[in-house]
Image (cartoon, rainbow, N blue to C red):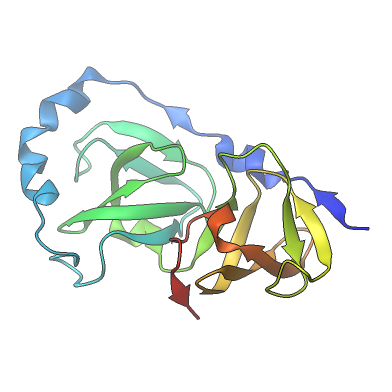
Length: 186
């Protein structure tokens, strides 16, 4: 019988501070260059855009524009939160989180380490399986919003690890936010 794994980390990651500022709307024009990137690679890094990364720092600020003089929109209070990079501008990366919050983050706050969130849009449990098949045993059932580390994906299944309690297995790739459908990596 598989147990239901609830995430206590979910609440910690959900603790974001919103700083509302009308000044954010005043900075739109200088950002046009960053939005008009041609192709599917970043002009700064040469890496694919969009791509998933995670927060490296214990505290990371999401800003309205690419610089410290732009207002803070959100403050993330834990590492390993998955983000999607959608643009690059100098040392800044435009990112989006699973709630669709968008803004700019300094590159040094980000890591290439892959993490994901189990079906943050869902309401039902997701099976963590012992092998990459629906016929394998369920090791646990994961609630929506559980944060996981992603070791690899084969296009259909991802090998994941949950830190507390230390638990690993396979989840269908379409049930994760932090990896693209059909994405393959090791």
